[in-house]
Length: 459
Image (cartoon, rainbow, N blue to C red; front, side):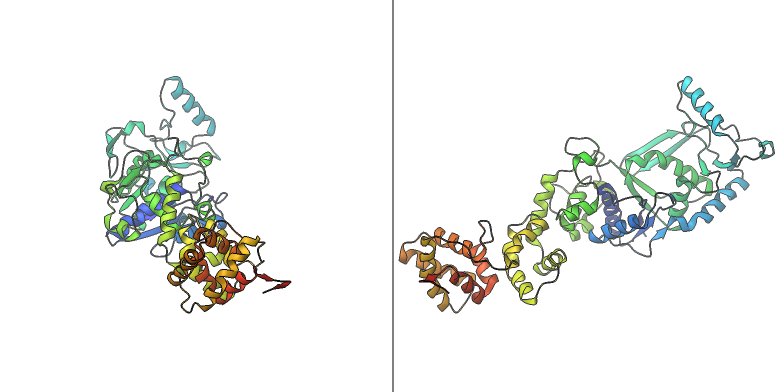
């Protein structure tokens, strides 16, 4: 069974790149009928916060990336991580290193002077711990083979090879007894039964070290796929200057989760020329064979157009539910009005923010518009036929008003603009007929009559 995971560090918001990683792993698991697990890598106690954990949970739920089983918190596994490091020491596969910070710094400087990459030279690799200076707390380092190659058969990058002598004896446990990221990730992935890991190619160098730990522990190695990081429209690595980095920002800017997921899906994965891909299609089509090696660019204009598509396609009841979160408590009468008008509202809104602004026409307390004599005369002409209209729907209302336009020789556009003004006081709105139906006959006629003045009496 395919088992994937998403393993963020809770030190801030859910990054847009992290969301893509989660999506790809989720889709791979769902495609194969496997499991998608969530692990919170919170061993950095100083930087990890409950607020960041909640931001991760909230962001994934909003994107509808649901995980199986309870989330695993890496901090709860620290003892097991350290015990396994001690086991490797007992087996001669790891050792205690008593180097001081000054000695490590000298090693780095000597390597630089010789034109080599700065790394630990293995001075305690074969020494007896009894030679250790007093009062020095050791770290535990893994014995990396000094000959041969480490080969990674990457699902995206293909075969990648690193000579073992390019890898230093990495630290598994710090001098304070806490395991390092390198060890913890391997142990947790093994214990969780992870079979596949899709992640950013900034982790590629780490993977060669992870492989060495797997080999030392005698465990099966997951299949890895390293995808290029997301770039901005200018081709540079995505940063704050390109716009929103956190999923919470996209949500607050009014993007739909379906649109964000569709956009992220196309950043590094493709299915022919398809641009708009539903969740069901994505699960059916997703394959690591279609993950790309080239960096993808986040195009905000494309995202906005995608969002407009998903706004128009969204279920009206769901849109109303999401809209009410930002509006707050309203009467059932207003809810019904919003629902009747939702089709017209969503056709003219590319984001939830635009929908919220447009929906104000159905929320605001009605204030009669100021109209000129010409508009008042138009209202006088149309009010009686509209009062007589028994079937209050878009088709009948449009037919009635077009007949009046033809019979009275009044431009239809003038009738529509007059109605738009008296109904809402705005120039940009859904169609007049959408609004007449949404408001209903009684409220529509009340607003129309507010523009009629007979003598000093306002009807």
